[in-house]
Image (cartoon, rainbow, N blue to C red; front, side, top):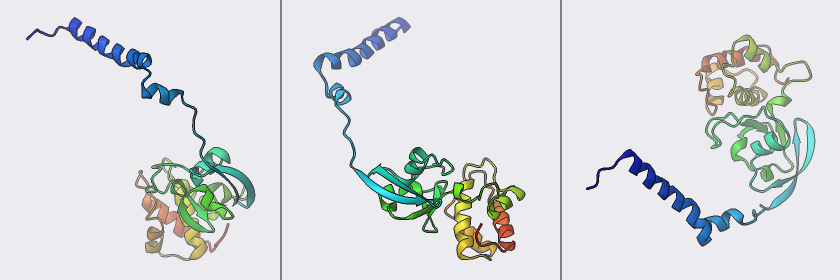
Length: 200
């Protein structure tokens, strides 16, 4: 067996790379044809959605998620994408006052619906009581999951203005906090509830 030197290894590796990059262009491989073929456009649908009490008439690709439409086309970037699999809850918004994962909900499904994002909680310079309570009780840590936590909490307080700690934890069970700041979130929500304000 011929001993493998560093020079021989580099030379043979170089030939291998050259053959995989040059030969397909000579033979007209399927890879090249795929790269040069025109992109196929996805079907599009016209929808009307009300986001934070503002109506939007949009033409969306049928494959766009609600999170994508909110972030990339309405520039409402408060809705975060953490896992893109409907598992972490960072993308939680309210659809007709019910919390949903917007990363796994298609925009076309939201046609004619009312959506509230974290940007819709505050009224001008006046924070929602939940937002104020989160600040006062050190709720946010890195802040990435905070908007989703806020929206799940707002849905809870809209439905149940005086929840127990157990009910708060249950309402937040679909929202993951990688900083493990759950106790602070629970304290914040209970504090907001004590102020007796169901809506902002």
